[in-house]
Image (cartoon, rainbow, N blue to C red; front, top):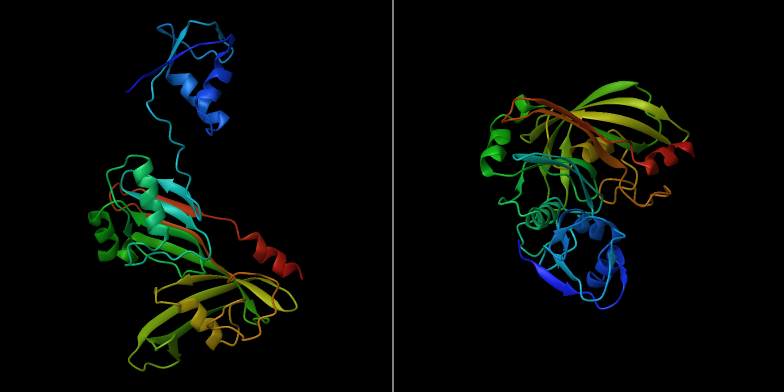
Length: 289
């Protein structure tokens, strides 16, 4: 550990002295430094009100202070040496092949750099830019490959919550369609037209005069699957600029779709892991209207 020495020039207590030396650092971070890395005249101390007098030497065991990187637009829900589970905020792209783009993966890599982890983030699965919720990120190609080779065997529960337009009459149902990539969006067919089969199960959790709150489980993970299928059902997801109503008058400034539950068998340790997040508060408020 590199050390820096400071001479005391006027009487004061140790914590205010350190705050002066680490201008711009948070008080909690300076206290953390004081708890582990400070000596006065060669004697280690963590006493915040230690009285300093002119001529004393304060030694700090850091050469240059750097504020810890705090990820924005993602929350770290779980982390071990093999993988991470993050909660991605709406409006953030999961991944891009362009090096300069700000994505969930680039933010995770910044976090790895700040915590001196010798690894890179690898995409396990993606969420649409405007969909928030739980995402898996692998710390190695090997772990990522394990998910790719046996996704259905490893991930045993993955659920979304959505607010859709109108009142769904069925308490629960299964939607099966075939999806193909169009020039600007995903196209859906109720019969097999050579596209990719997409299966979604939904359960109604709450109804209001205008909207229905539903939970959805996916048997398949096609691009835009939920959004396309709900449109085909005549109940598009609220505030969906691509598959929803042109004039979406809902008082919510985001797509009403969130990946709230993720359960899987750890591909390395074999442990069953279960994660969930609350429904977004904006969804709940929407249902009150």
